[in-house]
Length: 84
Image (cartoon, rainbow, N blue to C red; front, side, top):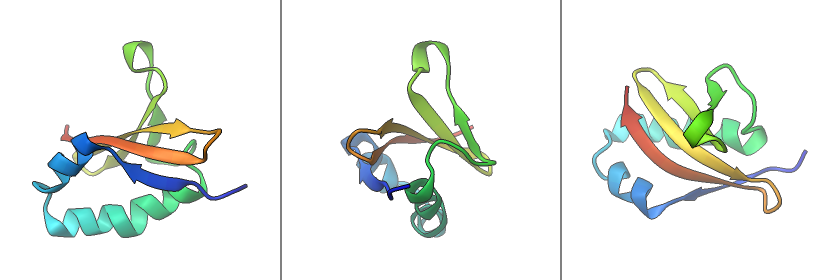
């Protein structure tokens, strides 16, 4: 399986400025490496349904990282990050 690239949207860029540096470091070093390998499946990954179909969420403690997968381009677009 080919590795995916991570792309951060403008919405996420704004939220990223407010995230604790330790937490963002965890996202960059641990979460992104998992998403590059397999963004479809994992213990913290869930495919969303209904009006959010096509989106996935990655659970990080009490926070959720939301992303889309563009399979034909091998890109994971990180859309938002919210507290549960």
